[in-house]
Structure formats: structure tokens, C-alpha cells
Length: 353
Image 1 (cartoon, rainbow, N blue to C red):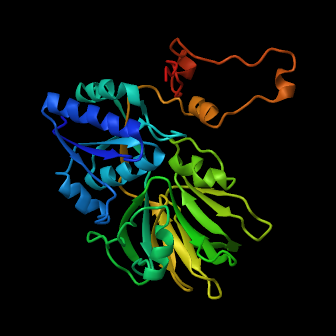
Image 2 (cartoon, rainbow, N blue to C red; image 1 turned 135 degrees about the vertical axis):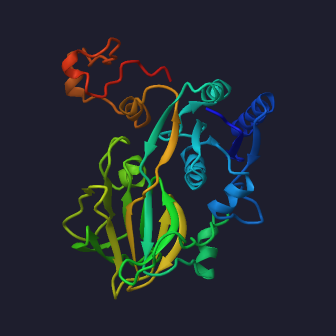
């Protein structure tokens, strides 16, 4: 593919990420590719995704150097500009990042030479009963340990505002949208609707809607299911609900999830991919649904999601299952599948990383 301009998102708090940034800039200089640092946290605050992408010259490729959090920031920018995103793994978990730091130059060569795969990942979009705002007193509380907050989401100019369907907000989420309590001693009370029908009224610490990609993040920590990133679904998960039914609900991508703050509830914060973007009060609501646009993520080899799941989660084998001293072998398929299996997606080349 043709890469004329590259956007670079660096986790400045990690020396290895800063060093990898020097490698990327040198590669860009060698290949005549423009390079701009974007989404940098500084004292001047942060800009919305559209302004950041414009300031970077609308890059064709966004490269993130850090962990999954850095990748999420890069994905926000790439989705806004319909650019490809390549994640270089310098984090602790690394479910989203693709390339080891030592291979960053090799990875960039592969992209330039079109030796890549592109994963199309579901994104979440948002409508709300009103524009999201973060009150000044809440903003000060939220700043601690988070860096500058993102500005309030803008209204999408290409979508219709409707009294019943709400205001379309120009935000996308790769992982999840979360409605969470602000007061430590008080849960939020929320009516949850699926595809326009009331599911139940919850009292909980938080309620979240995740993509398949985000199923291994907050949703997983709250007891939600692990979903293949290739699946098409929304995952609703309550966090510490004060009720008997505490299960996740997996909906079809065309079945939106609505969350309405109830009359006697306290205030609730709206977080999008871990970033607080607004505060809602009783009577306010948000609707979460599959976005019409997708994230295009660069992958250089076969997707070994389940092998990565085993490694990253440190999955161990049941003692009873290996008591005879013969643990299950790794099943690395190295030959083409037979005809009756050829319609399935099988990993035919072991993941070397």
C-alpha cells in the first residue's frame, strides 16, 4: 500500500516506547514518509479526534508504541480518519497490539510492501438524550492519575437529531462504553433496554456494553464472556449488581442497548474506552449500538487469538487432567485442511510471536 504520512502515538512514560519512536521516525526519513506525533498529553490539554487528525495531516497509517491503552488512543484517531492502525507491543497484557518492539522496522517494511492482513473490527457508536458534559468539580476528581481529560464529544453533523432517538455523538469505542457510579457509597440505578424493550432495572456499580474486541477488558474482569474478536455481537455486562440476575447478555449487532438513569439514582459517569466523557443525572439516557464504520487494524500473520488468550491469561491445566503426566499437546496445524473443513477458519501456520 502507499503510505504518504504516518501518525505516531507514543507512550512517553516508557523508555522502550520512546526508543522505538526514534526507529519509526528514522524509517520514515529513509522512505520519504511524513511523520507526525499525535495525541500527546501535555499541559495544553487534549483535542478531539478530528482536530488531532487534521493537525497530523490526516495520516494513512497510525502506529502506536505502548500497551493496549496506547493502542486505544491510536484506534480513536485512526477510526476518525479512516486510517490503518498498527500496534507495537510494549505493554503488560497486549491483547490489542500486534508487533513486538524489536520487529517494528520489519513490520513497517511489510506494510509498505503490502505483505499484511487487515482486520475489520466492530466499533460502538453512541446517542444520548443530551450532550455530554463533565462538571468542573467532577473533572478535578477525575484528573488524578489520568492526565488531561478529552473534551466533551461533539454532535455528528451528518446524523439527524431526534426527540425520541436522541443526539448522535461523534465518538466511537473499540472496547466498551461504561455507565458507572460517581459516589462510592451509592450504586447507580439504571433501566436497561435491548432492541427497544426493557430487560430489567439494575442497581450496580457500573453497567457496560463491550465489543467482541473489548470482551477481554473490563467486561472480562466483571465476569463477562470471552468473545472472539471476529464475532459480530454486543456484550452487556453488569458490574457488582445488587440483584439475583448478574449474567452478561450477548446481543446481535443490530440490537442496540439503552441505559437510562432512574429517578432515585445518583449521578453516573459515561466512560468510552476508559476515558470519562460526561456525567448523566436522573432521567438521562444513552443508546449504544454498532457503528456504521469499522476500525482497520494491521495484522502481519495469522490471528492466534486463543493461543494469545492462553499466554496472556496464564491459563493452566486442571491438575486432574494432567495427573497421568501426559498434558495435552499443542495442536499446531501445519498442512492445508481437508475438503470438508476448508470452509472453516483454522490457524494453519503457528504463531511465532
